[in-house]
Length: 239
Image (cartoon, rainbow, N blue to C red; front, side, top):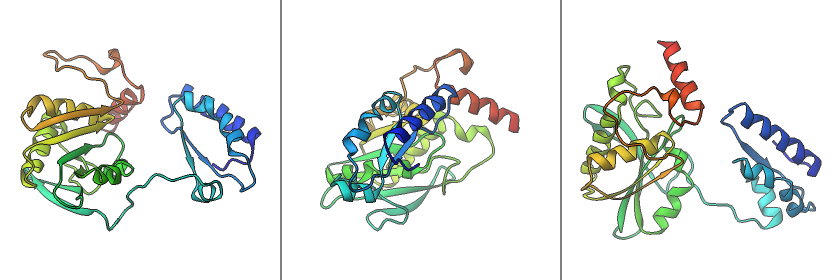
């Protein structure tokens, strides 16, 4: 979506409100400004969108015209990273490996959520590497270049944790920093519980911690982001 002026911005703001009321996941504003346009005025009309959780991106042309620095990111087939595969407990995983110059200070595993890919962490990889960290970003089971077995037994927290631990072993990492986003956040919590000696630190983006339960609890009665429940019922309808 290109933004031509404040009135157009107000229209997109109203549209963003509609997206959120309808539980839509897509909340993205792409801003394209003419060189003579006052982007500060335009941004003032987007403050409400930001408060609603929308992401705002400037086009490269707008950044150049207004001297706005763009955040570095990796791209598909980026020469700064390696695209590798590994056999983890009988399943082929694809993953991104980024190495810093010199000896790494530590290794970071970044786990994506649904629906996403390893490239969902594209903005974080260059920064972490610049801090002297080795970065490993797998395509999780069923995503990207990783195998997608049909049996649900391949998609449990335990299986994901065991596979990531095996990947850490194969690359020679005796200790890792573990980060997750969305459903990947739920995975990293379980990983840390199963492999506490392997994890030196853990962080999760937009996923609260929920302790393991002995009894089954339907997802519809727990706090959720709505789309999680919709996705669950949609998956059942495909069986």
